[in-house]
Length: 393
Image (cartoon, rainbow, N blue to C red; front, side):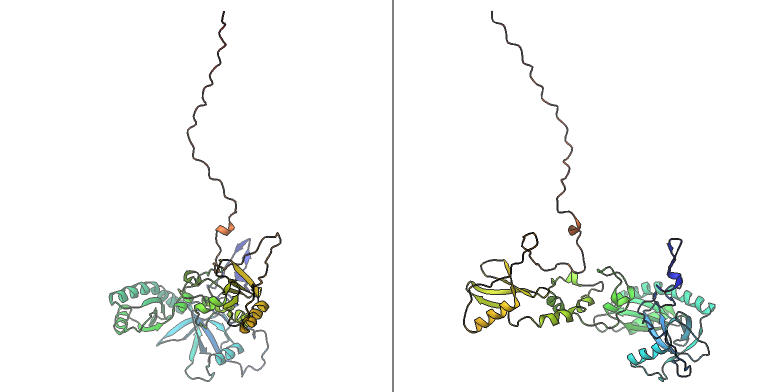
């Protein structure tokens, strides 16, 4: 954290007093680091007059043209043009970095459709915004009830009111196309606003809600990830992960985006492995490929007469393939002996956990003896007193 408000004093964390509008940009999600902020630009006439404004703590961003004589900094609350009114947002980018972002998103700087920045937000603007933001929770509950009454196959995810309360955007999720013309009429009559329906995906909903992933960090979709790529189970197979849908799925119910992060590294490593090595012919029968270990450059095979897995090097597999192509069948696979430091065989198995840790792995291997139930103690048996022998006279 770069600002002084996020530091600590007297052993207590102060926290961000800007409520997501930190001047350093580290508290607001989906931010771009301004790496041009420290570079001097002497020509003020050619500087970029467009700023990036964030709404609803970074869930929505847009560009606005600053035609005023005021100079705004990152973190300032400003009032911008809205739908027949105004909206209030937080400036997240200014200067030359905005010009680079416009080029990245394919927006021309001279585009006349870019809306204007009106003024710095005053107390009255902020008061009106707070009054309308309170209505969002009630509107979300009411809109879900209306969709249930109309039997529409859709889920209302979020409702965002414009700062002046003249427009409301309803974000929804639906698998198929939905006819919500009747729904728009009811919502407009219910809340007396202009209604806009916007469809989002499951990953975008998870980004809006936020949360902590199985890795212990904030979700990528709510912090920095904006380009959602398709993820399939093939990525898990290349990485030798168990195809367990519950463990490979994220909070959005889809496969985790992080499965694609290391996929290119695995694909580059698999290029050195021989092709068509699923079956090898030896004297004992056909050896079937079970898995590939790219970290040790080994291929694990199983024989038909046992369930034991045999690790074989890449060079040995290629040699067996060459012999099989010549009609020669070798006697053995010649597996590698994986011996640990203490002389015990090291067996490599599939990783069954993806980003999780089991509590059983943290427990001691020794079983704790369970205390026996309390039983009533029986009195010890009385010892028979030995009588002295009778004197026979």
